[in-house]
Length: 159
Length: 82
Image (tube, chains in turn cyan, green):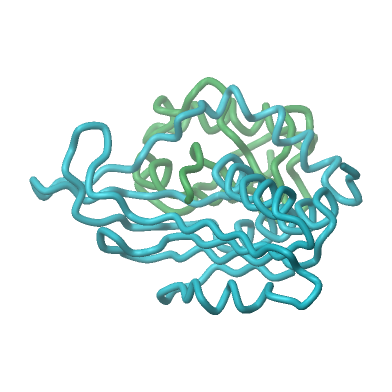
């Protein structure tokens, strides 16, 4: 298990190699990349900013939850910060497992929880030269109380 | 009343015009009290959503949780990682 907030390009092959083991029947991977459009606007790049210490802590909690829930220690995730160009990877997750279904499910769990809980923000650069912070699709009010409860129960949580 | 330093990020830092803000809160202040105090801040206070997320000691806190003497306090804009 490993998690990191990084300020350099993500080496996806290295993440996959890290979770590869002879007992595995599957290594699953997700890579999130900067898209050239959002909500109908042309995007030229994205600044990723974070509450670094908390983002590290929250990512660690998510990785431990995934390991416990899906029964593998082969879980690694890196999220990159800074200014990224279209096509660059902002996040990568790799999971190794004896079976493909839990490998795929664990990857999905980590990216969904990351997007819901980890304090990272993005500011899009548009083709017209303007920039704007991206609003999350779910409102803070809707997830606030739930997140506080999640954290109370996060340590030692079972499937 | 004690002064509490609150970390701000992204759109909130822009709205308040600074990466931290100091607010006066009651001695037994909870997350809800802190948010009420932040709302009265002349710059940016009025722009906060109905129930902004607050983190205490690097974990999300509930409305009734105390905020003093428990470590770093931060106001968390809607997250958008990935």
